[in-house]
Length: 210
Image (cartoon, rainbow, N blue to C red; front, side, top):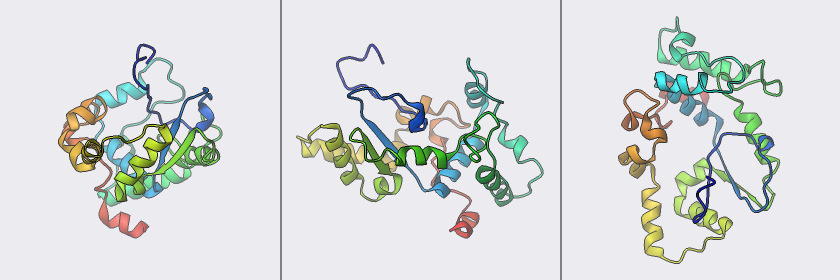
């Protein structure tokens, strides 16, 4: 990032607002999501994780706290996919890590609710833009205009903007998964084309939750 000086620099993170220092002039865009959908996205990522995924999380230098267990190990004894989803949903809602004293849920990753709360608390800060995932799905063009306005980047070419909106749709990104998926999908079984998307959960359980 230090070498990227000609264009706007950006960084993606899952950190709560309390973990980031405030740098003058930096802009922060936070995308929140319905907790139920976020859970199934997490479930899909975890379910399809390969050795590279666990190696990146559990073997990286500076590891803090215990290692994340495997999906298979945690769901051992469950007979159906619904049984697995129910078990993990309960743990996700009620269990945290002893190493994260301020979080009482979110296991085996981090607390979505604490994370959202920290960003909600600073939503009115002039350098923070709060965006909802559902709004991106229902009005992608409108949200992209809002983001561009927040960044101070006027849309000068409507034809180019229309093309960019199309390329940001889920259908387009799925077709170009090798280019847009994190590490080209190398952390999941099947690679980028099979990288979890969170839009195809265990339907029967998801409907009961709603």
